[in-house]
Image (tube, rainbow, N blue to C red; front, side, top):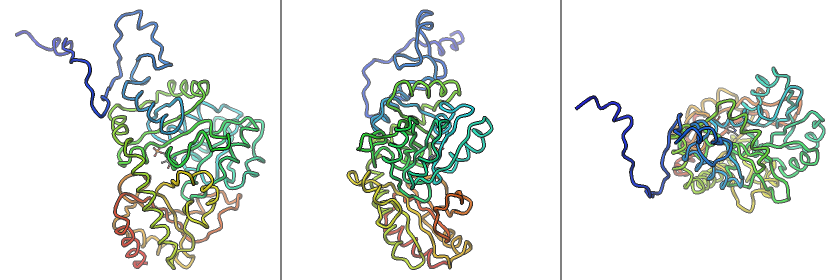
Amino acid sequence: MSNPSTGLIHHPYAPPAGFVAPQPGVFKASTVIFPNVAAMRSREWKDKSGYTYGLHGTPTTFILEERLCALEGGLQCLLVPSGLAAIANVALALLKTGDEVLIPDNAYGPNKALAEGELQAWGIRHRLYDAMNPADLAAKITPQTRLVWLEAAGSVTLEFPDLPALARLCRERGVTTVLDNTWGAGLAFNPFDFGDGTGADISVHALTKYPSGGGDVLMGSVITRDPALHMRLKLTHMRLGLGVAGNDAELLLRSLPSLALRYQAHDRAARELARWMQGRPEIAQVLHPALEGSPGHAHWRALCGARDGAAGLFSVVFHERYGTPQVDRFCDGLRLFKLGYSWGGPISLVVPYDMAAMRDASLGTWPHRGVLVRFSVGLEVPQDLQADLAQALACM
Ligand SMILES: *Cc1c(COP(=O)(O)O)cnc(C)c1O
């Protein structure tokens, strides 16, 4: 037998068509092969009528995009390698020198860091606004404002803003809105329809969190309902070379069917533990938008009450009498809650935050002096998590 190399590379066997299974196939490619030159010249990468190159999509990523559109109520979707890459894709597509972007003071920290560390150097100005005060946003929109970020609930501090009021303001002023929809996950509320005729223009989702659900995949999505807006985002996506791996898309496709069940389980357990923490003498304030007395609770009820969804996050502010060393001892004393960033996976996580370093003091909206600790509740048995919190409080 002669050397089989060429035969192995160009093997003619093709399996029969018609294979049907619960999960779609995993296609992986840099190169996509064309049947002839005419097809190569005429194939269009901008729509989903065919395939041109791995970065422009495969059957696997197209399927994932369509399912994410169904989840969030959008019409077009871009996949990127992380939630932060989704934030960057939007900023780089829609902002140019001389423009201005407004970001909520309580936004996901790296969104603010991108504006400070990158956008500023390109002559794109950013300002922080008080998400809980629509008048502050109204006062900060200028003729240069091209983009307003919305986020609900606030990262770490979990205030729930009046999203319809913020979106209405932006629409009246003709400014594009982009919602970081990671907390809502497409389940707590519809990012494109807040129920009063308003909605965000773009929804960004860190699929890393609940859609993955495993703590093992990084991915983000950028979803729209407007084809022209989508095309602007897609051109930047293409020029920056953003794309996702087939195996990561596969993991997302495997996790999506259980998303709603997992989200609800995280949510129920988090509410149970947050209420229990409310009764603890060490705690000055529990921050969870579905709990009465938490900032923005009425806004949460108005937007999310019908679906009654609230993710699996809550934060607590310790009484001032507990300093950082004692709260560190509490965090170190936890056994089931692990110290780690991100959230949405099966393992409960905890992070202590230095609020003085996180908020813009000029906005003056952070009323607490005690140390803040954020919990991401996983899928463990809630009673076991409560016992863990109790024994760690005793460590203080
Ligand atoms: C985690 C997170 C992101 C970023 O997601 P990565 O995939 O970790 O980059 C963006 N926004 C919010 C609200 C997040 O929680």
